[in-house]
Length: 207
Length: 207
Image 1 (cartoon, each protein chain N blue to C red):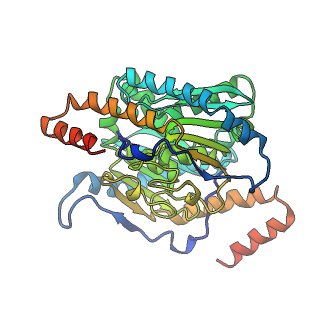
Image 2: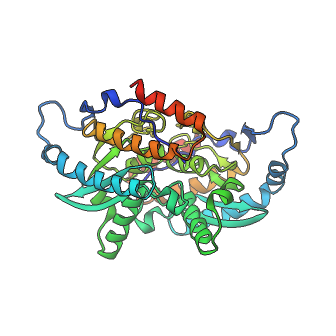
Image 3: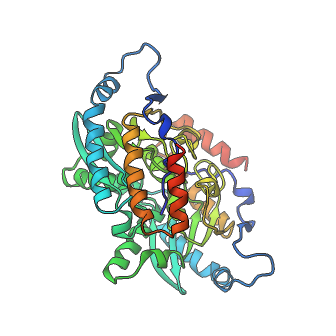
């Protein structure tokens, strides 16, 4: 599966606004509220990420928030399901789709009003899905410089000729995201060939 | 939703090998067999695409073939489901995943031995999913220069630092794919504002 990198821990707690929909000085209540709730909802994403780690999955978790409530959550489920596409975001999106169908809600409207909190930068597949769902606000913790599809490897604003505007903020609790990834790879390394283990340990020490 | 372009009809029946896994002169039976069956399986993909068109969906359809058999097929289901991520490939992938779970097959093995036939270049989301599933062979009809994630807007080989090798061939029945897209947009245009309709008709006439 796609293994995210954790090589950027040194900058991962620096909160950086990558993209803003509102013009400078313009009040955007949805954005302000989303920022105020960063700690609460990113922590909820981490509960999912830690559940993933407990199941020997790459520790990625997320929540989608609509009108102040979590309407869907997900954690990486790639290994257990043997489905490399079951990333946290896809799991949560499927949950929300099912909820919308059951309650006769319009998913397009719901997604277009929702905020995503996820501990790691989404990959190309998830970033493209989020773009197609017209998610207006994405907050992620650590960057994913090997597979990140928001701005690391791929840039979500290059995906189509007329991309939707998105608020994108990175860095909040990024250090914790990297620490979880390191715990995952440390455990994985115990099963790796000895020469690979040594390389990983050296990498960590030079950070 | 993401509407593919049909502006490149003039080159769409030219078969072009974008990527080959085998070295020049090397025999690759799976690839040779897949090429021999292009007409049969691309036609099956078009059956799906036409079903999409019959349901007022952007006409995209695909089949995945394993050991000479179609193991999953899908067609665009975005409008009916109100889920912008239900592209033909995602529908087929879900079907194959369910089949593997029911029959206790390893999806990783199945996908890594399968060939995808699809009438339109996959978008970024689908291309990334196909890459993560390690699909070795992809044949698509028309290029999608607004949203294509294989080589048009995004290049699948840039998605990660060590991308899997893929045979990618485009152009077979591309003209038919474009013709279906034109039928879709022609019908859609009847519901569009008159000024937009005129523009579309002009575009078609200048091709």
